[in-house]
Image 1 (cartoon, rainbow, N blue to C red):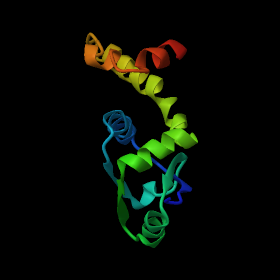
Image 2 (cartoon, rainbow, N blue to C red; image 1 turned 30 degrees about the vertical axis):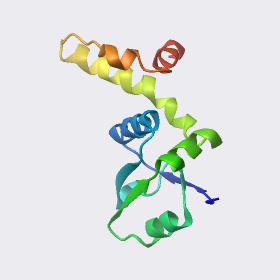
Image 3 (cartoon, rainbow, N blue to C red; image 1 turned 90 degrees about the vertical axis):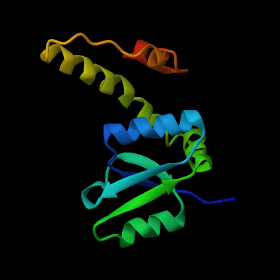
Image 4 (cartoon, rainbow, N blue to C red; image 1 turned 120 degrees about the vertical axis):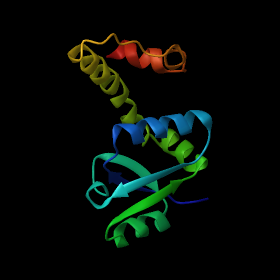
Length: 123
């Protein structure tokens, strides 16, 4: 069994959404982190090889997260703190639409995803 280590990185909203989408689809994910984003508050479970790659990076790093690794993040709780950001992202999108005086509507396929309605009710 592979041993994973907690490591904090700074993920963008788009990267967080991609992480959730890849988890839902059961596929791997490739994330690019710049030098300023290799330290942060978003916890990921990384292999020793990935951790060494980050520590040796001088300009940035590209991480390949496997489907099994993403699934393990959910089981160990490393994935759940990111779930709290989804309502914030959606509310930010609504506020932006209001500032631009544009109607905002979430796509129906977004609302039909498992767990999205529960997250929206919590916010």
